[in-house]
Image (cartoon, rainbow, N blue to C red):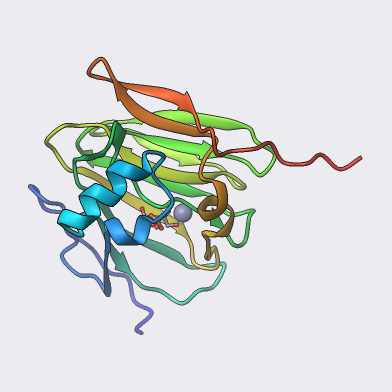
Amino acid sequence: MKDVPFTLELNAPDFIPSQYDKHIRRTLSAMKGQYSDQESYACLLAKEDSLLYEVYEVTRPELAGELLQGISIVHPGQVGDEYFMTKGHFHTVLDTAEVYICQKGQGVMVMETPEGDWAVEPLYPGCVLYVPPRWAHRSVNTSPDEDLVTFFVYPGNAGHDYGAIEEQGFRKLVVERNGQPTIIDNPRWSAPEVEK
Ligand code: F6R
Ligand code: ZN
C-alpha cells in the first residue's frame, strides 16, 4: 500500500467511491435474530434472501493513526413494521469515534452506550453525524423507496464488535406506525448490571 495522498470521488446517483478495496453485501440471512417480528423475517427469507445493505470500503492499515473510509448503502424495505437496517456494532477499541456524512435518502442512526444510554439522530442529505467514542451505532433507512447512502470515516485501529448487539439488539427499535418512523422499546433488551 502506497503512503501517498489520494482523492476519492463520490459520484451521484449512487455515490459508490471511484476506488475501493472491499465490497461487503449483507442479506436477510445475515440478520438472523435481529428483527423483532420473527414470523415476518422467516416468511420473507423463505421467499428470497434479499440484499439489505452494502458497504464499499477503502482499506488502510489497522493502525491508530490511520483513517478508514467508505460508503454504506442501506436499501429501502421492512421486515414486518421494522425498517431495513445495518447489524450495528460497538468498536472493539471502545474509545474510538466515527463520523457519518449523509449523501442521500432519509433515515436515522440508533446509538447506545454499554451503560444503556441511548440516542437516535436523523440522517438526511448534507448532515454530518458525530458518533462519539463508546457509542454502538446502527443505520436505519426510513424511506419507502430510496437508498440511504452515508459516507463514514473512523480510526484504523477501531475494529468491530458485533457480539453484544447480536445477543439482544439495541435498546430502541425503529418501526413504521401510522406511516411514520417511530421509536419503540426493544422487548428483548435488558439493562446492564450495575457494578456496586
Ligand atoms: C464502520 C461503520 C460502518 C458500518 C457499515 C455497516 O465502523 O460503522 O462502516 O460498518 O455501515 O454496518 P455494520 O458493520 O454494523 O454491518
Ligand atoms: Zn462503526
